[in-house]
Image 1: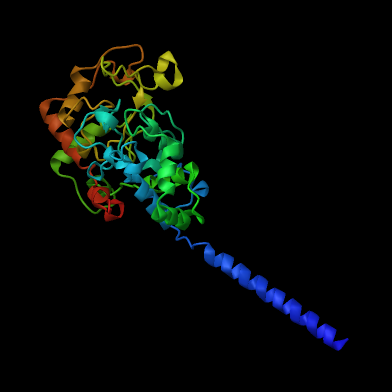
Image 2 (image 1 turned 180 degrees about the vertical axis):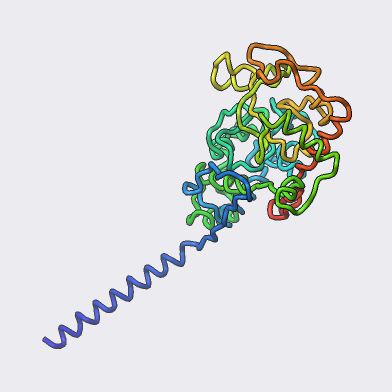
Amino acid sequence: MKWRLTIIIFLVTLSGNFLINACRKGQEDIPRKTGLTFTVPAGFPAPLYDFSKNPLTEEGFQLGKMLFYDGRLSKDGNYPCASCHHQVAVFGTYDHDLSHGYNNQHSNRNATPLFNLAWKDAFHTDGKFKTLEDECLDPIQAPNQMAEEIGNVLTKLRKDPHTLQMFKAAFGTEEITIKRMQKALAQFTVSMITANSKYDQVKRGENSYTDFELRGYQLYKTNCASCHPEPMFTDYSYRNNGLSVSPYLNDYGRFLVTGKKEDSLKFKVPSLRNVSITFPYMHDGRYQSLKACIEHYGNNIQQSSTLDPLLKNGIHFNSNEIIDLVAFLRALTDSTLTKDLRFYQTH
């Protein structure tokens, strides 16, 4: 009887050790992820992005960065996300009115700079996409941009052992899915924050305006702040700012999404942050300088039924006021993001 009890205790102990070791082995197979903190800059409102659905991790960020610069997301390998979103232009299109795409084509609009995305409730200048995750699939599939099918992208990525390991590090297994790709790209782009311009430094008491900038700041508050309020320098609304319709593009903005005639020619108000390095301007990149952009509001407003009421009589500045206003707009430039090696292409 005693020897039977001894055998039972031995077997139970052996089974327990086996289960413990099996659990430990399973834990070792799951990579440890390094959490990242999303810091809201001083004076900024609470972000709208739901981080609980896509927590930031170093592994997710690095995977998103790799995908952002990866030509395999395009049909011929030549048009990664970064081909339209250049870091030197705070991840907007540098020095081109319309972005270049597959087979020497052009996109229909000037690529919007990618910064402070956590505070947006819709994406693209017409607000077509409600989440950052959904938005990233559109340029991949657009025939005049990256021109690739999502299924082909996944097939290409699944053939690469290094990419499989990066997905495992970010999500626990080597499985490559559309949803995981979307989440990784979102983690990378939502981390692009700009909040250290001279304007921000003045607000923090670390710098002071020149006389030109101070006069320009007053002009901004009187004439521009209703559509471009501080601290984000946009109210995220859709407005018709009096641009004529390009006969080449026939772009009617928000109307193309809602089909409502009252939305005709309305586009999302862009942020004025970093505006001096995001030229050319307007949704189609028609203006090459801030001076030309400012003069539009005094000389080129096209009257229409959906024109923003604030622009009915135009906004007029004399030559000295334009100099001052441009000086202030340049004070909204933050070179931190454009020089941040963390976002720089390393392969």
